[in-house]
Amino acid sequence: MHPLDWVIIAGYLLIMLGIGVWAHRQVADTADFFTAGGRMPWWLAGISHHMSGYSAVVFVAYAGVAYDQGIVSYVVFMFPLAVATGIGAFLFAPKWNRLRTHYRIASPLEYLAQRFDVPTQQVLAWSGSLLKVFDVAAKWSAVALLLNKFVGIPLGWGIVITAAVTLVYCTAGGLWADALTELGQFVIQGVAAFAMIGAVGIALADRGFSYADFWSALPEGHTSPTTSSYPAYFLLVYVLVKTFEYNGGMWNLAQRYIATPTSAAARRTALLSSALYLVWPIVLMLPMFAAPLLVRVENSEDVYAEMALQFLPAGLLGLVLVGVFSHTMAMAASDATAISAVMTRDVLPHVWRRARGFTDEQFLRAGRVLTVVFVFLSVVLALNAENLGGVLGIIVAWVGALIGPISIPMMLGMLRPFRHVGPTSALTSWAGGLLTFALTKYVLGLSEAITVVSPVLVSLLLFVAVGSWYRDAPPAAEEITGALTRDPDPTGAEPAAT
Figure 1: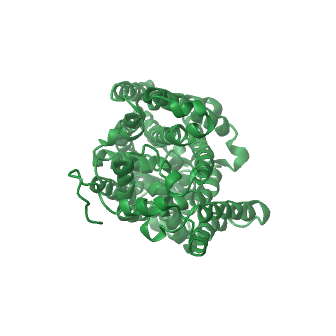
Figure 2: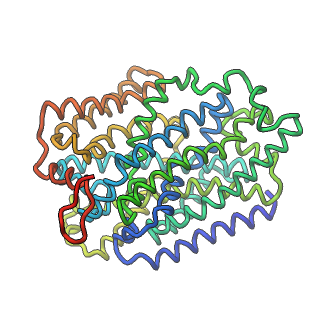
């Protein structure tokens, strides 16, 4: 890379660290650290929600799918996020905010101890935390692959460097630091994306094409919205999976709704994020769709880096690398903050008696320590990512398949129609989904599509069926699901349900 590229990268890292230092001054207690004190503007929360939803995997794994199979990469992996978040704007986002205003929660799982029971809360907290270690490990691995391609940094060092920079600002400023850095990253990543579009557009023109007409020259099947690898039924169930995942199943995304001042602001947060998921991935992926006409690579996951190296001038290459960094750091930092919230608020008091008497200052210190522990474990796992099926293997097979069994009790437990569903149904749903994943992937060896869709369908069926037959919800379930249908009235009067 040119020295100018290094200057841009260094400047970016200094800005991120500066934001972390500023945000550190805004954090006075655990509410500030984990939920921004409920003061985050909806537009900032919406951009943060969007930026926290995907990472360098877009430029590695999904770029590889675009190179090999075409627009199915957007239709199957990105478009469902827009649909899912749009659904959540009306079904889930306001309820997450009301959980904070009614019950003062700082963790997405905090309400589960009353809604179901403590064992259910602990099972979901531990299994979800373990899954997020895998998820973030995949993000470190993805950005390290690009660092290796761009500048020759060994994969291990790329993982460690990215994680270390992320760790500094997210432990300093918590959710405020996450959201503010994500806003800056969104702007930087936008400049990088349009620079890439321009450079690839020039390369296409040199070959007699434009963005309007290159589609007909692509290999056969590249303009098909679904393929044999990702059939239509996979797309439909993937929307279902992402509806749970992107509206709270990914705990860091629930935090964006919790952090807004009102339920109406939470709804606007989700709608903004939905609009960005609909449009912005096209901006990012348009050059990738044209890649088969411009470059040849042995490993399709290298295609985005190869195009940047071939077509971008000095300075812009560093900007694109910064843009890739930004997505990964945004998602990983927000995951780290969410996991530390869950472990600090929901797990630590139950496994360490002394923690039950912690002051708010001690809980804040514990949250920062647990953030460090989470990042360390994810780095260790990332160094062994290839043994677990590579980047796409982790993201699609592990996370995509297991997020449903973990999130279904947590998400549906907020809805009024499921107020009679208790811990038996929740734990049966969770266990059935995980067992289905193990059978389809490791015993029966079924296709990736079936491996992803089966666990969430089994979990959903078990939650509804067992809950209809065995109603053991605690008395608090009626109160909680009722409270989440309305906003608290500051005058103390009972507001109407909405």
